[in-house]
Amino acid sequence: MGKNDEKDPIKGFSNKDLSDGRDSLDWRSRYPKVAIRWIIFEFLYLFSYIFIAPLLAVACYLKIFPNFLSINVALLNGLEPYLLACLGGVFGGALYGLKWTYHCIAKGLWNSDRRAWRIFIPIVGGSFALIFSILILSNFLKIFDNNLLQNRGIAFVIGFFSGYFSDKAAAKLVEVSNSIFGITSKD
Picture 1 (cartoon, rainbow, N blue to C red):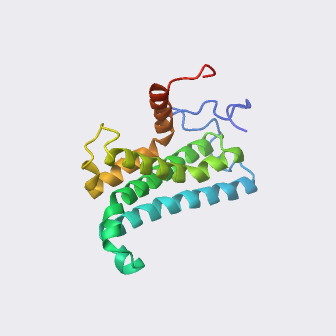
Picture 2 (cartoon, one colour):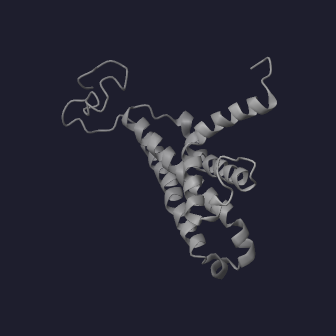
Picture 3 (cartoon, rainbow, N blue to C red):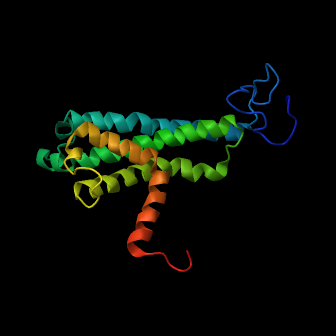
């Protein structure tokens, strides 16, 4: 197996020890072929979101959708901040999922039980970004000026951070919910 024959796959794995507990020239994957196929699928799936979300955001930014999809320009202008924030959230969620996936693979922690999380994180990220942008634009969440999202680039970036940190955003929403609605005795 390598330098560290213990069962702990991350023993000796750190920024200082890049050997991952393996002998020199030990290059073969520890994962079986079926796992490698799923890993490749997950990378391609997440990368497709990383490629498509910014591409759609640029199309929205350049306003080429009306010619391409026959969308009413007035409707698109009204929805543009929400769409850009949502696309930014999808991009952020996919990037976070990709980062988390390659760390798990490198540390020997990848497993198929977390596949649902890896598949849904871009969608969750986009959903959180959409809700966050609605909270800002409605002036319900007064942390930001509600005119801030009228800047298309800022809308995408706020969406990106909302999607990238959607796990933290969910935790913060629980705090806000508990502050507004109170905590039940079971909590």
